[in-house]
Amino acid sequence: MAKKKLKDRAHHFWREWVKPLLVIAIVLGSLRSSAADWNDVPSRSMEPTILPGDRIFVNKLAYDLKIPFTTVRLAHWSDPRRGDIVVLWSPYDGKRLVKRVVAVPGDVIEARNHRLTINGKMAAYAPPSQDTRAAVESLGYDVDKIAIETVEGRSHAVLAESMEGVGASFAAVTIPGGKYFLMGDHRDDSFDSRFWGFADRRAIVGRASAVALSFDFKAWRPRWGRFFSALR
Picture 1 (cartoon, one colour):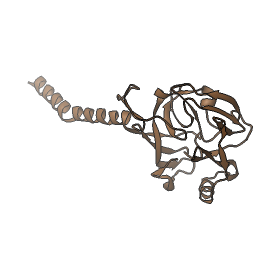
Picture 2 (cartoon, rainbow, N blue to C red; picture 1 turned 180 degrees about the horizontal axis):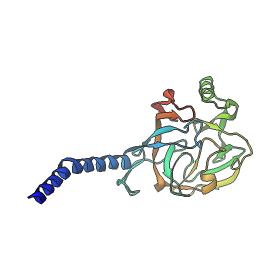
Picture 3 (cartoon, rainbow, N blue to C red; picture 1 turned 90 degrees about the vertical axis):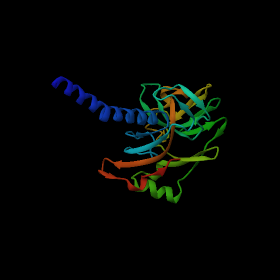
């Protein structure tokens, strides 16, 4: 009798608690895997656009639809464009990375002293606007080391400590089909395509479109002004 009661209780616990929670976990996990997710950023490689302590929103439906928990594509409607910030699986060590697309399949890219040339046309570089200067100075950056880089009408801030550092210059290279050339906006502190080569299209899991939350771990306080702010 006692054994039957124990079995009934176990069945009740499974039916009323474990099974519903398992279903919820599977549904939420599937949504995170194939539709929308977040990514915590621990490194400085995308400064000043993305800061250590940012939690960014990742739109996994930006380019295609994949089977949950796989890289198998069910549907495809777009591909990453120059200037997109993407989340991908690193071809170097398999870790998740956040980088910017600077060249797409068929492009010819080269760099001299952190100045990019794509398909024979040099990117434009300009000083930050007053609003951008105020924003980056409030975060503690040296504004003289920041420029606004523009490629085919898309602009964003880049940071360079030195014009002659490792990776500041590289010879012209053509991007093969199905591959992308990615870089961090902090050009002196990013381990990217300059060092580990091209990123495969299948390794790109989505586009980073916004900062959801942000916390300054040095000062132990939230960065309220970055909450729910769009990335560009």
